[in-house]
Image 1 (cartoon, one colour):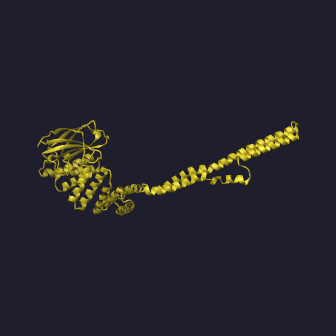
Image 2 (tube, one colour; image 1 turned 180 degrees about the horizontal axis):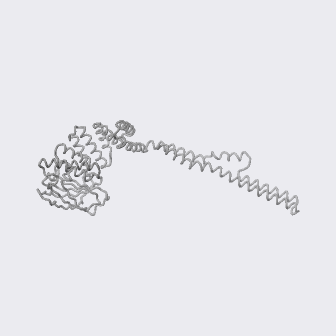
Image 3 (cartoon, rainbow, N blue to C red; image 1 turned 90 degrees about the vertical axis):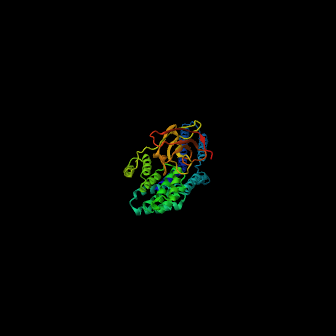
Length: 420
């Protein structure tokens, strides 16, 4: 259907060029014929006047003959000026005018442009993206039809074969392989898609799904490989929802209900209301019940909090949508994910940010540390990975109270440029 529409539009465009060129000759010929007819009518009218003058003796025969000859010469001159003589030497150019270079050039140029547009679109066009857009719609419809999913995978394979650098083609292939339960193959496709993704947020999302597929393929174990994928995703987006869901599910399976509650609470803050959020709430209720039966404190236990009064130097000017990461990190510089993270936009500043166990993004939370340091980063790339040119502010060491409902307060200004 797409190509049919393209061809029709191209034919219409060709018509806009060809029709005026073809009509030009007809219009020009009609104009000359009309002028010739007008000249002939004037000649006949003037000749009739001469006959009348001769009959009324206003002129003699000699004068009549001379005036008639002059009138005939005048008519002949007008006809010659309009190139309407029957003389073949003059008429031939008019017959060939349609095929003159001046008229053929626009037609030939339009034909060349039509052919070139097809060739260039085949080289540089987004026809693969159009195919993928249709496949996305059909993927949702084929969810419960394994044969239809398999057919879609073959179609996506054609796109990948044609363009092996198409990240979204690899991603769609991975999603369809997941629906067929082919987790090792899906993990490989997710891996390739993540390598090709350029946008940090898209890449983090794909890495999260890659971690899920590899987790299932590894027998639902957080292997070193899976944790490596999770680390990559969280370096781009510490609050990547797919990763938090995976960590929560693994904690629940391993009866670490408090950690499961922490992860799922974060997921709920990002997930829209619907069946998925209702399922998470049910799992949280079950985890709380199991935690209480184990004698745990439950999700309402007092945990440390840090209230960060965050501001930014007036010398810093970036886009209002630039991402700002506020994190609590181990004071001793221990490697690993931060203990708590919140993500803001530059337009939110200045503001007060409260960090707690609910903001954990890894196996450890604020309550697992005795002291922390707060780091706030304006990320020009949108990634949690700090890069040269980003802006940053870092607090000193903050000691966390053992049991207090009041958050520890700290003021922090983002003013330094990251040099390395």
